[in-house]
Length: 387
Ligand code: IPM
Ligand code: MG
Image (cartoon, rainbow, N blue to C red; front, side, top):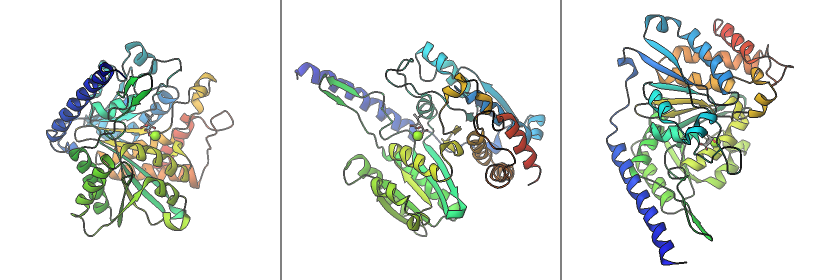
């Protein structure tokens, strides 16, 4: 390897270090959580995304409009569509999150988002960063909160996945040093770790959750995971009434399928990549990623999304009107809770449980053998009236 190649790589590394140190300053200057109750008008932005996204988010918008009728009429809440977060537009602009989309998002307070296509090397799109990841970074949505519940099996889990650091922080800025060597980077900051740990413990305390489990691979990834674990432990010491344990990601992945042990877990804190992987596994117990919603929480903004993909094949086959809106409706429940409409969140959640698991008067099959997305949303709204 030539000295020149090493020097070029070192320069890229230096630029990353400066960028990350700047981010630490920004975290320190971020101020406190926005108080939604103090706003004259709270703005909810709806991002359709790609594939089946526009069809399902349109239905979620109808359900929100139904539940928030009075507040919308009085001007206390406004719901607006945010256009342009499509793979076609993102590819044309060669930006993960086009500037004009980001500036519209920044005019909102909370966002409901459908799935967006994440290009991969070799497909028809330029290999730009995922829109989710870009949005999480641009709006500093540092906590990815994913609940999974299967009451009949005693499963009641809430995952707090760190959302802006770890392997994702500079995931699209690794360095091809030369033909033989590629290097990626993992980032842990004190500020970034403390804020996710604090949020998880505060959640546990407010919701009477008896246990918090910290999940890392600190035995091998000693520097960044080691720091993450130490800092979470430090925050834990402020909450002596909550039991804290820590696990390595490999054995935790196994314990989630251990029927005798898994019902003991309540709240999890994880670095970004482990959180990504384990929340898909966890969602599978309650019926798959299509049934789960995800909250991306920051101090100023918050975004709520379906955690499944954009299902381009359904659109190609003209089946998008049969797409299942349940994941994005679960995201709407989290949105309502986050902005303080807890009673309506609870009613929507109850209605979804009835429609999806109990009464099941309509079933989604993804094709014309089942209900359409619109019919199912009507069913959910009728059910909301009964609970
Ligand atoms: C998720 C998704 C994203 C992630 C993808 C689409 C980039 O898997 O929200 O979990 O890896 O975070
Ligand atoms: Mg994922």
